[in-house]
Amino acid sequence: MIENAILPQDLANLIGSESRDFVVKANRAQPLSQSIALIVFGFIWTSLTAIFAFFFFAPFIKDKLLGTTTEEFSTNDSDSFDLIPAVFIVFFILIGITLLILGIRSLFTKGGYFVGTPKRLIIFQKNSMRSIDWEQFSGDITVNGDDQKGNISMQLRTGKMASSKNQRERFVPDVIYISEIPNVSEIQKLCWKRINENDPSPAN
Image (tube, rainbow, N blue to C red; front, side, top):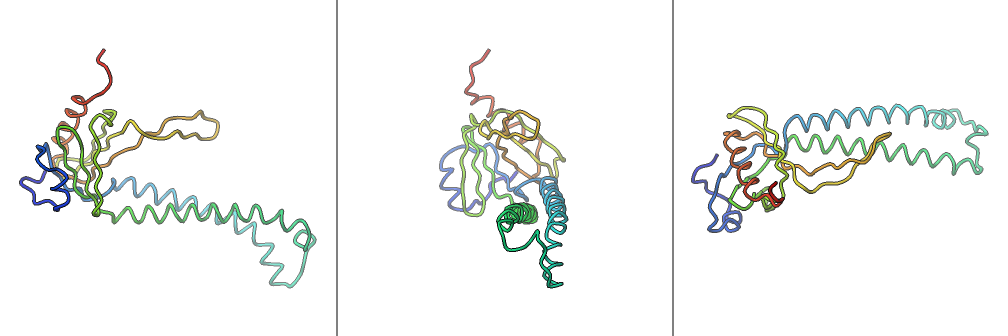
């Protein structure tokens, strides 16, 4: 934690006279494992789509190079039919490239400041600020690493519905990452305490 930290002026103004449970500066915007997983997934996605694209477009390229025209690719209604899968292939390749770019970018994105107060968690990153009341957190917290460099993942009550093939829709919560910070155990305990204190659900 940062004791008696000199904070950016905008952040200090937002905190005002609120008491601070902790102030910490994260080295990364998200855990390294998340960035690597995104890069690997993007690479696999792009590679598989590129292989499919090669076999799809190879006949077109071969015919152009040889100067021949086959019935399959002649100028008729089949052109519009062939255009549809081509558009989908290009679209999926762009998705893979986007995932790769996002993964690589996340490797170099700094985490910014995290300030815990009795009522909320304040996030300051790249001159943008976000304030989240503790009651918005579900209480599902994951901690890994050690007290020299650890990660905290905290789920929010908000999220979106997602589905996959042959599976029912499931709720995927939004997650706040506080990555590569010292004293991770102490900060986790403070977060857990404030989440419980501000829990909006009725007690059993």
